[in-house]
Image 1 (tube, helix red, strand yellow):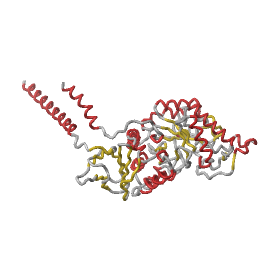
Image 2 (image 1 turned 45 degrees about the horizontal axis):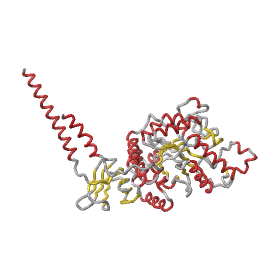
Image 3 (image 1 turned 90 degrees about the vertical axis):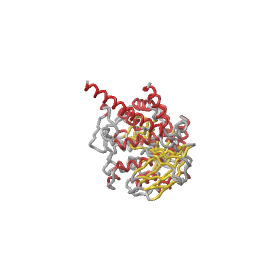
Length: 492
Protein backbone atom coordinates (compact mmCIF):
# COMPACT_ATOMS: atom_id res chain seq x y z
CA UNK A 1 0.00 0.00 0.00
CA UNK A 2 2.77 2.43 0.98
CA UNK A 3 4.62 1.62 -2.23
CA UNK A 4 1.49 2.37 -4.29
CA UNK A 5 0.96 5.72 -2.58
CA UNK A 6 4.60 6.62 -3.18
CA UNK A 7 4.38 5.78 -6.88
CA UNK A 8 1.25 7.90 -7.28
CA UNK A 9 2.90 10.88 -5.57
CA UNK A 10 6.01 10.92 -7.75
CA UNK A 11 4.37 12.11 -11.00
CA UNK A 12 2.40 14.73 -9.08
CA UNK A 13 5.61 16.09 -7.61
CA UNK A 14 7.23 16.30 -11.03
CA UNK A 15 4.19 18.04 -12.47
CA UNK A 16 4.34 20.57 -9.66
CA UNK A 17 8.00 21.22 -10.36
CA UNK A 18 7.58 21.84 -14.09
CA UNK A 19 7.72 25.48 -15.23
CA UNK A 20 4.53 27.01 -16.53
CA UNK A 21 4.11 29.43 -19.39
CA UNK A 22 4.22 26.78 -22.10
CA UNK A 23 2.92 27.75 -25.52
CA UNK A 24 1.06 25.32 -27.72
CA UNK A 25 3.36 23.63 -30.26
CA UNK A 26 3.21 25.37 -33.63
CA UNK A 27 4.40 24.59 -37.12
CA UNK A 28 8.19 24.68 -37.30
CA UNK A 29 9.75 27.77 -38.90
CA UNK A 30 13.34 28.40 -39.93
CA UNK A 31 13.80 30.94 -37.16
CA UNK A 32 13.23 28.06 -34.72
CA UNK A 33 16.33 26.24 -35.99
CA UNK A 34 19.74 25.90 -34.33
CA UNK A 35 22.46 25.25 -36.92
CA UNK A 36 25.65 23.20 -36.61
CA UNK A 37 28.05 24.33 -39.35
CA UNK A 38 30.84 21.99 -40.42
CA UNK A 39 33.64 21.91 -42.98
CA UNK A 40 33.31 18.50 -44.61
CA UNK A 41 37.03 17.86 -45.15
CA UNK A 42 37.96 18.69 -41.55
CA UNK A 43 35.12 16.98 -39.68
CA UNK A 44 35.45 13.17 -39.70
CA UNK A 45 37.27 10.66 -41.90
CA UNK A 46 35.26 7.45 -41.98
CA UNK A 47 36.15 6.00 -45.38
CA UNK A 48 39.68 5.22 -46.56
CA UNK A 49 38.43 4.60 -50.11
CA UNK A 50 38.45 8.33 -50.93
CA UNK A 51 41.75 9.27 -49.27
CA UNK A 52 43.88 9.56 -52.42
CA UNK A 53 46.25 12.50 -51.97
CA UNK A 54 45.15 13.13 -48.39
CA UNK A 55 47.86 14.79 -46.28
CA UNK A 56 46.88 15.81 -42.72
CA UNK A 57 50.26 17.51 -42.28
CA UNK A 58 49.63 19.97 -45.12
CA UNK A 59 47.14 22.69 -44.12
CA UNK A 60 46.30 23.30 -47.81
CA UNK A 61 45.65 19.66 -48.68
CA UNK A 62 42.64 17.43 -48.17
CA UNK A 63 42.66 15.90 -44.67
CA UNK A 64 40.19 13.10 -45.32
CA UNK A 65 36.87 14.28 -43.92
CA UNK A 66 33.94 12.81 -45.87
CA UNK A 67 30.17 12.49 -46.05
CA UNK A 68 30.24 9.10 -44.34
CA UNK A 69 32.04 10.74 -41.43
CA UNK A 70 29.16 13.19 -41.04
CA UNK A 71 26.65 10.35 -41.10
CA UNK A 72 28.64 8.54 -38.41
CA UNK A 73 28.62 11.64 -36.20
CA UNK A 74 24.99 12.69 -36.61
CA UNK A 75 24.28 11.37 -33.12
CA UNK A 76 26.92 13.75 -31.71
CA UNK A 77 25.26 16.71 -33.41
CA UNK A 78 21.80 15.56 -32.35
CA UNK A 79 22.88 15.09 -28.72
CA UNK A 80 24.07 18.69 -28.66
CA UNK A 81 20.51 19.63 -29.62
CA UNK A 82 20.97 21.03 -33.12
CA UNK A 83 18.08 20.83 -35.56
CA UNK A 84 19.98 21.69 -38.77
CA UNK A 85 23.41 20.84 -40.15
CA UNK A 86 25.13 23.16 -42.60
CA UNK A 87 27.78 21.75 -44.96
CA UNK A 88 30.62 23.63 -46.62
CA UNK A 89 30.42 23.35 -50.45
CA UNK A 90 30.46 19.67 -51.52
CA UNK A 91 30.76 20.12 -55.32
CA UNK A 92 33.77 18.77 -57.23
CA UNK A 93 36.81 21.00 -56.66
CA UNK A 94 40.33 21.54 -57.92
CA UNK A 95 43.41 20.14 -56.22
CA UNK A 96 43.71 21.57 -52.68
CA UNK A 97 40.11 22.73 -52.87
CA UNK A 98 39.34 21.10 -49.51
CA UNK A 99 37.25 24.15 -48.57
CA UNK A 100 34.88 23.61 -51.52
CA UNK A 101 35.11 27.05 -53.18
CA UNK A 102 37.17 26.10 -56.28
CA UNK A 103 34.41 24.39 -58.22
CA UNK A 104 35.17 22.40 -61.35
CA UNK A 105 31.78 20.70 -61.66
CA UNK A 106 28.64 22.21 -60.13
CA UNK A 107 26.66 18.96 -60.41
CA UNK A 108 28.92 16.32 -58.96
CA UNK A 109 30.24 15.58 -55.48
CA UNK A 110 33.91 16.10 -54.70
CA UNK A 111 35.43 12.59 -54.88
CA UNK A 112 37.35 13.10 -51.62
CA UNK A 113 34.00 13.53 -49.87
CA UNK A 114 32.19 10.57 -51.39
CA UNK A 115 29.41 10.12 -53.90
CA UNK A 116 25.98 11.49 -54.67
CA UNK A 117 24.54 8.37 -53.05
CA UNK A 118 26.43 9.23 -49.86
CA UNK A 119 24.88 12.71 -49.86
CA UNK A 120 21.42 11.24 -50.36
CA UNK A 121 21.97 8.92 -47.39
CA UNK A 122 23.18 11.82 -45.27
CA UNK A 123 20.02 13.83 -45.94
CA UNK A 124 17.84 10.77 -45.32
CA UNK A 125 19.60 9.98 -42.02
CA UNK A 126 19.29 13.60 -40.91
CA UNK A 127 15.59 13.66 -41.76
CA UNK A 128 15.06 10.47 -39.73
CA UNK A 129 16.32 12.47 -36.75
CA UNK A 130 14.01 15.38 -37.64
CA UNK A 131 17.08 17.43 -38.62
CA UNK A 132 17.31 19.63 -41.71
CA UNK A 133 20.28 19.98 -44.06
CA UNK A 134 21.68 23.16 -45.60
CA UNK A 135 24.24 23.24 -48.42
CA UNK A 136 26.68 26.11 -48.87
CA UNK A 137 26.44 27.15 -52.55
CA UNK A 138 29.01 29.00 -54.64
CA UNK A 139 27.06 30.58 -57.52
CA UNK A 140 29.27 33.47 -58.55
CA UNK A 141 32.69 31.89 -59.11
CA UNK A 142 34.48 28.86 -60.50
CA UNK A 143 37.91 27.34 -60.14
CA UNK A 144 40.60 28.87 -62.36
CA UNK A 145 40.91 25.34 -63.72
CA UNK A 146 37.26 24.99 -64.70
CA UNK A 147 36.80 23.86 -68.32
CA UNK A 148 34.74 26.99 -69.05
CA UNK A 149 37.80 29.23 -68.54
CA UNK A 150 39.42 27.91 -71.73
CA UNK A 151 36.15 27.41 -73.64
CA UNK A 152 35.86 30.09 -76.34
CA UNK A 153 32.08 29.67 -76.38
CA UNK A 154 31.97 30.65 -72.68
CA UNK A 155 33.88 33.93 -72.79
CA UNK A 156 30.70 35.85 -71.93
CA UNK A 157 30.11 33.61 -68.92
CA UNK A 158 32.79 35.48 -66.95
CA UNK A 159 33.21 39.09 -65.95
CA UNK A 160 35.90 41.37 -64.53
CA UNK A 161 33.30 43.74 -63.11
CA UNK A 162 32.42 42.46 -59.69
CA UNK A 163 32.35 43.60 -56.09
CA UNK A 164 35.44 42.94 -53.97
CA UNK A 165 34.86 39.82 -51.89
CA UNK A 166 36.44 39.14 -48.51
CA UNK A 167 36.54 35.35 -48.75
CA UNK A 168 40.23 34.47 -49.07
CA UNK A 169 39.50 31.37 -51.17
CA UNK A 170 37.65 33.39 -53.82
CA UNK A 171 40.05 36.27 -54.29
CA UNK A 172 41.75 34.61 -57.27
CA UNK A 173 38.69 32.70 -58.51
CA UNK A 174 37.18 33.81 -61.84
CA UNK A 175 33.85 35.60 -61.33
CA UNK A 176 30.80 34.42 -63.25
CA UNK A 177 28.67 36.93 -65.13
CA UNK A 178 25.40 36.31 -63.34
CA UNK A 179 23.68 38.89 -65.57
CA UNK A 180 24.18 36.49 -68.48
CA UNK A 181 20.91 34.58 -69.17
CA UNK A 182 22.83 31.40 -70.04
CA UNK A 183 24.72 31.48 -66.75
CA UNK A 184 21.51 32.15 -64.87
CA UNK A 185 19.74 29.23 -66.52
CA UNK A 186 22.62 26.89 -65.74
CA UNK A 187 22.67 27.89 -62.08
CA UNK A 188 18.89 27.60 -61.73
CA UNK A 189 19.03 24.11 -63.21
CA UNK A 190 21.88 23.31 -60.84
CA UNK A 191 19.77 24.31 -57.85
CA UNK A 192 16.97 22.07 -59.11
CA UNK A 193 19.45 19.21 -59.56
CA UNK A 194 20.56 19.26 -55.92
CA UNK A 195 17.04 19.64 -54.55
CA UNK A 196 15.66 16.82 -56.69
CA UNK A 197 18.61 14.48 -56.23
CA UNK A 198 19.27 14.90 -52.51
CA UNK A 199 16.18 16.37 -50.82
CA UNK A 200 18.26 19.14 -49.24
CA UNK A 201 16.26 21.73 -47.26
CA UNK A 202 18.20 24.98 -47.73
CA UNK A 203 21.01 26.78 -49.52
CA UNK A 204 23.35 29.44 -48.19
CA UNK A 205 24.83 31.52 -50.99
CA UNK A 206 28.39 32.06 -49.79
CA UNK A 207 29.45 34.54 -52.49
CA UNK A 208 26.26 36.56 -52.84
CA UNK A 209 28.16 39.84 -52.46
CA UNK A 210 29.61 39.29 -55.95
CA UNK A 211 26.36 38.16 -57.55
CA UNK A 212 23.77 40.27 -59.37
CA UNK A 213 21.02 41.26 -56.88
CA UNK A 214 18.39 40.67 -59.56
CA UNK A 215 19.64 37.12 -60.02
CA UNK A 216 19.64 36.44 -56.29
CA UNK A 217 15.97 37.40 -56.31
CA UNK A 218 15.29 35.14 -59.29
CA UNK A 219 17.26 32.29 -57.71
CA UNK A 220 15.30 32.53 -54.46
CA UNK A 221 11.95 32.65 -56.23
CA UNK A 222 12.94 29.71 -58.40
CA UNK A 223 13.78 27.33 -55.55
CA UNK A 224 10.60 28.19 -53.66
CA UNK A 225 8.57 27.20 -56.73
CA UNK A 226 10.30 23.83 -56.51
CA UNK A 227 9.60 23.53 -52.78
CA UNK A 228 7.49 26.05 -50.95
CA UNK A 229 9.26 25.58 -47.61
CA UNK A 230 12.78 25.82 -49.06
CA UNK A 231 15.03 28.30 -47.27
CA UNK A 232 17.66 30.54 -48.88
CA UNK A 233 20.23 32.55 -46.93
CA UNK A 234 23.20 34.59 -48.13
CA UNK A 235 26.36 36.22 -46.89
CA UNK A 236 25.14 39.62 -48.10
CA UNK A 237 22.06 41.72 -47.49
CA UNK A 238 19.27 41.24 -50.01
CA UNK A 239 15.55 41.96 -49.68
CA UNK A 240 14.83 38.99 -51.94
CA UNK A 241 16.07 36.21 -49.68
CA UNK A 242 14.84 34.66 -46.45
CA UNK A 243 17.93 35.05 -44.32
CA UNK A 244 21.38 36.54 -44.28
CA UNK A 245 24.61 36.36 -42.34
CA UNK A 246 24.99 39.51 -40.23
CA UNK A 247 28.73 40.13 -40.28
CA UNK A 248 28.51 43.33 -38.21
CA UNK A 249 26.55 41.55 -35.49
CA UNK A 250 28.92 38.58 -35.48
CA UNK A 251 31.95 40.86 -35.15
CA UNK A 252 30.33 42.73 -32.28
CA UNK A 253 29.43 39.52 -30.41
CA UNK A 254 33.07 38.42 -30.67
CA UNK A 255 34.32 41.83 -29.54
CA UNK A 256 31.99 42.04 -26.52
CA UNK A 257 32.48 38.54 -25.16
CA UNK A 258 36.16 37.85 -25.82
CA UNK A 259 36.97 39.65 -22.58
CA UNK A 260 35.21 40.87 -19.45
CA UNK A 261 34.16 44.44 -18.75
CA UNK A 262 32.70 45.13 -22.18
CA UNK A 263 29.22 46.76 -22.30
CA UNK A 264 26.45 45.16 -24.35
CA UNK A 265 24.96 48.42 -25.65
CA UNK A 266 26.00 48.04 -29.27
CA UNK A 267 24.48 44.58 -29.53
CA UNK A 268 21.05 45.99 -28.82
CA UNK A 269 21.71 48.93 -31.18
CA UNK A 270 22.34 46.47 -34.02
CA UNK A 271 19.07 44.70 -33.22
CA UNK A 272 17.22 48.02 -33.38
CA UNK A 273 18.72 48.73 -36.81
CA UNK A 274 17.93 45.25 -38.13
CA UNK A 275 14.35 45.55 -36.97
CA UNK A 276 13.98 48.64 -39.15
CA UNK A 277 15.84 47.22 -42.14
CA UNK A 278 14.37 43.71 -42.47
CA UNK A 279 10.86 42.34 -42.53
CA UNK A 280 11.88 39.30 -40.47
CA UNK A 281 15.08 39.97 -38.49
CA UNK A 282 14.47 36.72 -36.61
CA UNK A 283 15.86 34.91 -39.67
CA UNK A 284 19.30 36.54 -39.54
CA UNK A 285 22.10 33.99 -39.12
CA UNK A 286 24.63 34.88 -36.44
CA UNK A 287 27.71 33.13 -35.10
CA UNK A 288 30.84 33.50 -32.97
CA UNK A 289 33.15 31.48 -35.22
CA UNK A 290 33.36 30.98 -38.98
CA UNK A 291 35.94 29.71 -41.50
CA UNK A 292 37.24 33.18 -42.35
CA UNK A 293 37.98 34.35 -38.80
CA UNK A 294 40.45 33.58 -36.04
CA UNK A 295 38.81 31.16 -33.63
CA UNK A 296 36.99 32.86 -30.75
CA UNK A 297 38.85 30.62 -28.31
CA UNK A 298 42.15 32.14 -29.41
CA UNK A 299 40.78 35.66 -28.95
CA UNK A 300 39.95 34.85 -25.32
CA UNK A 301 43.39 33.32 -24.74
CA UNK A 302 45.01 36.50 -26.07
CA UNK A 303 43.00 38.41 -23.45
CA UNK A 304 44.21 36.00 -20.72
CA UNK A 305 40.64 34.92 -20.06
CA UNK A 306 39.08 31.53 -19.38
CA UNK A 307 37.72 30.39 -22.78
CA UNK A 308 34.93 28.32 -21.26
CA UNK A 309 33.58 31.25 -19.26
CA UNK A 310 33.70 33.53 -22.28
CA UNK A 311 32.05 30.92 -24.52
CA UNK A 312 29.24 30.39 -22.00
CA UNK A 313 28.41 34.10 -21.91
CA UNK A 314 28.63 34.57 -25.68
CA UNK A 315 26.60 31.46 -26.47
CA UNK A 316 23.89 32.50 -24.04
CA UNK A 317 23.44 35.73 -25.99
CA UNK A 318 23.77 33.95 -29.35
CA UNK A 319 21.05 31.40 -28.60
CA UNK A 320 18.59 33.68 -26.82
CA UNK A 321 18.71 36.85 -28.94
CA UNK A 322 16.69 37.19 -32.17
CA UNK A 323 18.03 35.24 -35.12
CA UNK A 324 19.23 31.76 -36.03
CA UNK A 325 22.30 30.71 -34.02
CA UNK A 326 25.06 28.97 -35.96
CA UNK A 327 27.77 27.00 -34.13
CA UNK A 328 30.93 26.31 -36.15
CA UNK A 329 32.22 22.77 -35.65
CA UNK A 330 34.81 22.37 -32.92
CA UNK A 331 33.45 25.23 -30.84
CA UNK A 332 32.12 22.63 -28.40
CA UNK A 333 35.72 21.46 -27.72
CA UNK A 334 36.60 24.43 -27.97
CA UNK A 335 39.21 24.44 -30.76
CA UNK A 336 42.02 27.01 -30.88
CA UNK A 337 43.61 27.75 -34.28
CA UNK A 338 46.60 29.56 -32.78
CA UNK A 339 45.50 32.82 -34.40
CA UNK A 340 45.75 31.50 -37.97
CA UNK A 341 42.30 31.15 -39.62
CA UNK A 342 43.88 29.21 -42.50
CA UNK A 343 44.81 26.52 -39.98
CA UNK A 344 41.69 24.38 -39.77
CA UNK A 345 42.47 21.22 -37.79
CA UNK A 346 40.41 18.04 -37.91
CA UNK A 347 37.64 17.82 -35.37
CA UNK A 348 38.76 16.00 -32.22
CA UNK A 349 35.85 13.95 -30.95
CA UNK A 350 37.90 12.57 -28.06
CA UNK A 351 38.38 16.06 -26.63
CA UNK A 352 35.70 18.37 -25.38
CA UNK A 353 34.75 20.36 -22.32
CA UNK A 354 31.78 18.80 -20.53
CA UNK A 355 30.72 22.08 -18.93
CA UNK A 356 30.63 23.86 -22.29
CA UNK A 357 28.79 21.03 -24.00
CA UNK A 358 26.20 21.01 -21.23
CA UNK A 359 25.64 24.74 -21.74
CA UNK A 360 25.12 24.17 -25.48
CA UNK A 361 22.68 21.34 -24.79
CA UNK A 362 20.80 23.51 -22.30
CA UNK A 363 20.53 26.42 -24.75
CA UNK A 364 19.37 24.33 -27.72
CA UNK A 365 16.83 22.63 -25.45
CA UNK A 366 15.47 25.99 -24.29
CA UNK A 367 15.01 27.16 -27.88
CA UNK A 368 13.04 24.00 -28.52
CA UNK A 369 10.93 24.34 -25.37
CA UNK A 370 10.30 28.10 -25.27
CA UNK A 371 9.14 29.76 -28.52
CA UNK A 372 9.60 33.17 -26.93
CA UNK A 373 13.33 32.65 -27.59
CA UNK A 374 12.80 32.11 -31.32
CA UNK A 375 9.66 34.11 -32.11
CA UNK A 376 9.27 36.65 -29.35
CA UNK A 377 9.93 40.37 -29.37
CA UNK A 378 13.17 41.65 -27.85
CA UNK A 379 13.26 44.45 -25.29
CA UNK A 380 16.10 45.84 -23.24
CA UNK A 381 15.11 46.22 -19.55
CA UNK A 382 18.50 47.07 -18.06
CA UNK A 383 21.94 47.80 -19.46
CA UNK A 384 24.55 49.31 -17.19
CA UNK A 385 28.28 48.73 -16.73
CA UNK A 386 28.35 45.24 -18.20
CA UNK A 387 25.07 43.89 -16.81
CA UNK A 388 22.28 43.64 -19.37
CA UNK A 389 18.79 42.23 -18.99
CA UNK A 390 16.61 41.56 -22.03
CA UNK A 391 12.97 40.47 -22.19
CA UNK A 392 11.49 38.19 -24.83
CA UNK A 393 7.71 37.77 -25.00
CA UNK A 394 5.59 35.58 -27.24
CA UNK A 395 1.85 35.24 -26.59
CA UNK A 396 1.56 34.50 -22.83
CA UNK A 397 5.20 33.42 -22.43
CA UNK A 398 7.88 35.77 -21.09
CA UNK A 399 11.57 35.05 -20.54
CA UNK A 400 14.35 37.29 -19.27
CA UNK A 401 17.98 36.94 -20.33
CA UNK A 402 20.50 38.31 -17.83
CA UNK A 403 24.19 38.57 -18.73
CA UNK A 404 26.79 40.03 -16.39
CA UNK A 405 29.89 40.65 -18.47
CA UNK A 406 31.57 42.75 -15.80
CA UNK A 407 34.32 41.76 -13.39
CA UNK A 408 32.20 42.16 -10.26
CA UNK A 409 28.80 41.15 -8.93
CA UNK A 410 26.02 43.36 -10.28
CA UNK A 411 22.37 43.89 -9.41
CA UNK A 412 19.39 45.19 -11.31
CA UNK A 413 16.05 46.30 -9.89
CA UNK A 414 13.25 45.47 -12.30
CA UNK A 415 9.89 47.14 -11.82
CA UNK A 416 8.17 46.86 -15.19
CA UNK A 417 7.10 43.22 -14.87
CA UNK A 418 3.79 41.66 -13.84
CA UNK A 419 2.96 41.60 -10.15
CA UNK A 420 2.83 38.41 -8.06
CA UNK A 421 5.21 36.52 -10.32
CA UNK A 422 8.49 34.72 -9.82
CA UNK A 423 11.58 34.52 -12.03
CA UNK A 424 12.66 30.90 -12.28
CA UNK A 425 16.26 30.40 -13.42
CA UNK A 426 16.63 27.87 -16.23
CA UNK A 427 20.44 27.69 -16.05
CA UNK A 428 21.38 28.46 -12.43
CA UNK A 429 18.09 27.10 -10.97
CA UNK A 430 17.49 30.09 -8.69
CA UNK A 431 14.15 31.78 -7.98
CA UNK A 432 13.58 35.54 -7.64
CA UNK A 433 10.34 36.78 -6.10
CA UNK A 434 8.79 40.21 -6.11
CA UNK A 435 9.51 42.27 -2.99
CA UNK A 436 6.87 44.05 -0.93
CA UNK A 437 7.86 47.22 -2.79
CA UNK A 438 6.97 45.56 -6.12
CA UNK A 439 10.61 45.14 -7.20
CA UNK A 440 12.33 42.08 -8.65
CA UNK A 441 15.93 42.32 -7.41
CA UNK A 442 18.20 40.44 -9.76
CA UNK A 443 21.72 39.71 -8.55
CA UNK A 444 24.32 38.24 -10.92
CA UNK A 445 27.82 37.15 -10.00
CA UNK A 446 30.69 38.29 -12.21
CA UNK A 447 30.89 36.77 -15.69
CA UNK A 448 27.68 34.75 -15.43
CA UNK A 449 24.48 34.47 -17.42
CA UNK A 450 21.04 33.05 -16.81
CA UNK A 451 17.66 32.79 -18.48
CA UNK A 452 14.57 33.30 -16.32
CA UNK A 453 11.01 32.19 -16.94
CA UNK A 454 8.40 34.65 -15.65
CA UNK A 455 5.61 32.61 -14.04
CA UNK A 456 3.06 32.95 -11.21
CA UNK A 457 4.60 32.93 -7.75
CA UNK A 458 4.03 29.43 -6.44
CA UNK A 459 5.46 30.18 -3.01
CA UNK A 460 7.42 27.53 -1.23
CA UNK A 461 6.98 24.00 -2.51
CA UNK A 462 5.44 22.65 0.68
CA UNK A 463 4.34 19.46 -1.09
CA UNK A 464 7.92 18.67 -2.03
CA UNK A 465 9.27 19.75 1.37
CA UNK A 466 6.69 17.56 3.07
CA UNK A 467 7.53 14.65 0.82
CA UNK A 468 11.25 14.93 1.59
CA UNK A 469 10.51 15.27 5.27
CA UNK A 470 8.29 12.19 5.17
CA UNK A 471 10.94 10.15 3.41
CA UNK A 472 13.57 11.19 5.97
CA UNK A 473 11.20 10.32 8.82
CA UNK A 474 10.51 6.87 7.36
CA UNK A 475 14.23 6.35 6.91
CA UNK A 476 14.96 7.25 10.53
CA UNK A 477 12.13 5.00 11.77
CA UNK A 478 13.39 2.12 9.63
CA UNK A 479 16.98 2.51 10.84
CA UNK A 480 15.80 2.72 14.46
CA UNK A 481 13.65 -0.42 14.07
CA UNK A 482 16.52 -2.38 12.52
CA UNK A 483 18.86 -1.24 15.29
CA UNK A 484 16.42 -2.36 18.01
CA UNK A 485 15.88 -5.70 16.27
CA UNK A 486 19.65 -6.27 16.02
CA UNK A 487 20.12 -5.53 19.74
CA UNK A 488 17.35 -8.01 20.69
CA UNK A 489 18.95 -10.67 18.50
CA UNK A 490 22.34 -10.12 20.15
CA UNK A 491 20.78 -10.38 23.66
CA UNK A 492 19.19 -13.73 22.77
